[in-house]
Image (cartoon, rainbow, N blue to C red):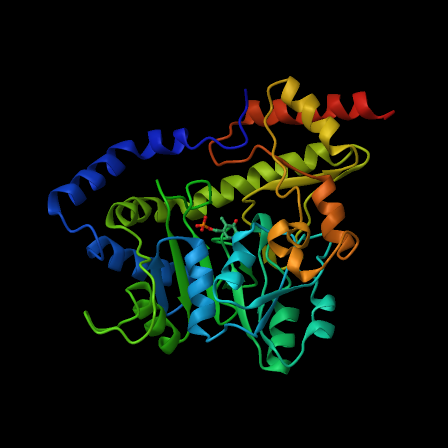
Length: 371
Ligand SMILES: *Cc1c(COP(=O)(O)O)cnc(C)c1O
């Protein structure tokens, strides 16, 4: 069986270092806000090229505290994509604001900048693009719109750590970048973790207070905060992994290139697109195809695992029923949800397994050619 993701190879490769780091934390006994957390914040900031990084418990908390730090709350609107993981709009809901959806660009699966401007009204406070599958959204257009209308841009970089637009890392282009270290992400912890990065000293200070019960000074609480900390064990593990991230992302690009070269000739199979000048990190390698579920079953029959990210666009989720947006509201997002299929990709996926995936898809496409 070829899984869509296998985390065990990476652990095997780093086991002596990781085991030693974990043992060292257990021995020093400083489990919260310890030296590894502070060092990891500095290392992520340097890696991305941004002055401030605040470690948090999850990517979801990074998004929700980003909104809090910008004073976005009840009555406010945030323009975002309906084709993403639920955490993106959950964060908007947690602060009491309302998501306003704009349809996606069917090539990149990210928010279509041309759909944004007509949605901007007096309650709009921010634009929240998602760099889905590790492919950067159209940041130049999005930041230009935001500037024209005085809106903040919060980047959901949960899937895009290391991706670039020109020379800028995703997460450093808008006001705030939000990262996740969920185990399956390109830089994964062995538990939950997240990071908020920003150019603004004021925003960083506010989030540092919010993550520690709403007070910058211990036992002085200025506002309702949360308990959201990256723990020391995870920070120690992530510090070992970070120096490998660029090589791992390069491996993902090499795998993507092999897939693209060898699948290109197949009919009725659309391959990933990335705008010139942007560097993707292939958190997923996602194709689109008619009769997607048939292809998925045929691949499953020969031991190749695939996934659908995501089968239901967010405007059709029960949690957003109150918005009254029915089927047909966002045709590109709805079509993507029906057609996308993500193939196995992770840095340790070897060439023979890549070739097996490619051969199986070619066979399956022949089998379904007449469907
Ligand atoms: C994983 C993910 C999140 C949430 O990150 P967590 O660390 O799991 O809270 C948010 N947005 C997107 C697009 C994601 O893929």
